[in-house]
Image (cartoon, rainbow, N blue to C red; front, top):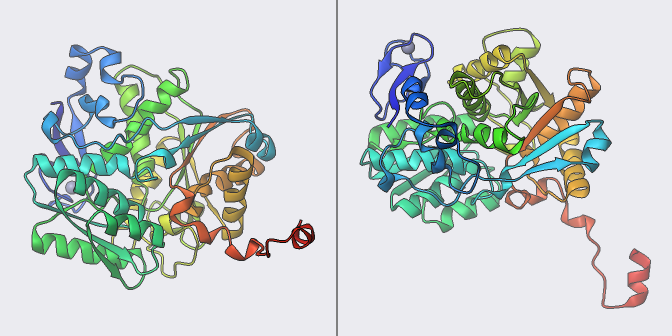
Length: 409
Ligand SMILES: [Zn+2]
């Protein structure tokens, strides 16, 4: 066990590794800290970050759960890194890779953070877990809670796509739809979890353990790119723990002397909900909660009202890594969904395609040069929310008649 403590990212106050959700001194975000010196003294690089495969617990030296009996896996991680030829040519990128997180057990990257969160809940002897989610975290926590035999309470916005609701209900979770946008679900889940002593696995930056699961993407990318660090990593962004998690993973590799650099991190949001991009564009280090959410990219539609500091954490990562933040319109999102499907055969939900739409924009703006090595994360499967990008009316219905068929062809 090398995880030592929780530490406030603002005032550096430290706490033991139990269910704390924010710094009691200043309210800041808590982060898991490890004894890296002892890790590098006692283990080889291959022991610390073995080559990728399904089950993120192969990286247990850099995860917060110490006992094997609590490590709950559904074979998450080990997702493919696909080299893009066709799509890359279309958008003018010469060295483009797609990290296909749709290939996780629930169809979304959230299985990484939820595997860690559920395992930590078991280690802390919790009987029940809860989350606020825009849908993917809900589906994932329900699956892992079922596996771990924990009671599970889920708070999701009323408009959550049916695919994600079905996954959660089927796994036996108690699912509650909350009127309004994600920030309302966030607030109610927080209140209920605190009153009922459920472990809150809301994977914004509220739960400090879940982001540790997101780190494992970095370890996999390092191997999949031939033991090197990409120039840019582009990530669909709601509250942004995935941006921070991947950055932290690469920063750890640098700290352990395994690499000498970190990638430039890009957060992509939807025009209709872009609290982080808004701050970035106006050179502010503070984030203002978003008021009117309007986008089909529901999985990243996080207004950050009441927990604006999550967005500020992402801005810090962007600053430290010399990265960028960019927003894309719903039209650009739909185009990216179809491009990815038709050029590469990968079908993703709208929010997942914003990384492709964002890259297209940043290449055209000259921010990213065509020759740079770029990894785009695609975070959720298309079947979770199929009707936002493809309308059923686009498919003709005819009688079993060859003449009618000739007409529609
Ligand atoms: Zn603090």
